[in-house]
Amino acid sequence: MYPDSGISIIVEILQSVEPADGIEAVRLDLDPIPQLNAKQLSRYHFSALAHDNDANHTDILHTRKIEGDSKPPIFVLHGEQHIQKFNAAELDRVCILMALYRIEEKKADLVVTFNVPTEAADGKGVGEAGLKLAQQDFENFVTSLRIIDDGLFA
Image (cartoon, rainbow, N blue to C red):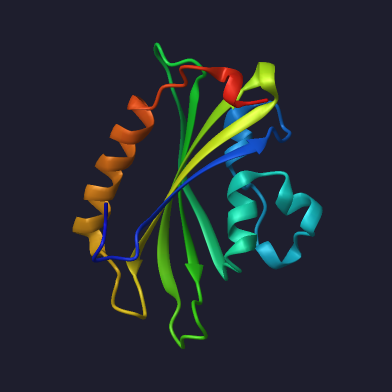
């Protein structure tokens, strides 16, 4: 979708994590990250991503639940991480667009993540215009995704 930029799209099927509330499962309420232990980080999808990215700084811009016909409900997080890639001197500023579909009866979480570098040391940052386009694509992706057969979640 984005061959000329550093934007990545990841879809994961994971074992459901606590807490049971979907909004809490995608957010990080504790700061700064270095003070958190690995157990705390692994409990929340956003914090797990920050940990995996070795993020130097992280912010949650907002969270919301998409109401409507969608089954399961969709919990959305928009956040930002500052990440040092490939020993670069400058930190990349990466917008994280994350959606969680909680499949309670299968104890599974389907997590869709768009990683959108708005500023990048390698020159593949998309700026604010690219971020707006990625946000539109993200909204279209997460609101049109349908789980037709939950047998996928063993």
